[in-house]
Image: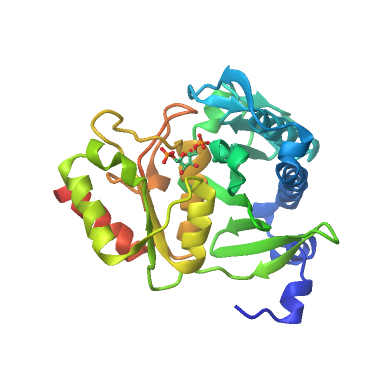
Length: 327
Ligand code: AFP
């Protein structure tokens, strides 16, 4: 992609000051996104200096998902809770690392509910592989007091979603209705510059991303779906959802983490991983399904629930879902 000078000189702050200016649906959203950008900068510095800064390793605890907590998981969770609370616009936060709802504020300016995976792919931290952060953003229902129930909203009600990849560069991708924009952190100015304006999935799907090591555990139809993809596309699998998703968004591809008879709901979290990325992919022209239904239509029953996820180019997602469903 060749960038014009005007695109490159646009920063996240200048973009937000004009992109939805005057649109009441997004009142105060700029403060929430700016908080995410601030937190992402802090995490990017910690990720780059991880070994040197002594943040590699585990806390010795397991999280609510039963997974080993890395030191950087805790640092990222604390950082994003801090900056989002400081934005003055967030009413409550749901976080993969925190069992209960974090209630931030109940005032009329506290308009947004944020659900986040503060550090996705954390088992990749100590091997210097890309990791990320993911955020789904809902408008609080007018007049509704903040409670656990305020967070159990289907993904289709999100007003925005964002993710950050901490890779060879730090990239923040933000979506609102019909618009997906990518910004790269300029290490000199410490600003996010608009480097990927108006992102759309390429028409051609190039890659499939799945944990092939799980193949033997899968049921027959899902195996058939995987072998069909294997026959057609190149395999790319990082093992950090954000990194796999970001590559497929830019290059064209499908990511799948299906359920299997032992874990019918798969591994990934509906509220922190599937919903935000499903929102992004749909605004970019793609699709996301659990295999049984559109991800964004699922009515959540619990904050930490899991879902199978099939996400990427719409035609390939539809074909894969039909093989899994009909097999
Ligand atoms: P970790 O945070 O434990 O590294 O898990 C990452 C993740 O939730 C997601 O980012 C990956 O796509 C997926 O799990 C990888 O899972 P497998 O290691 O089972 O392939």
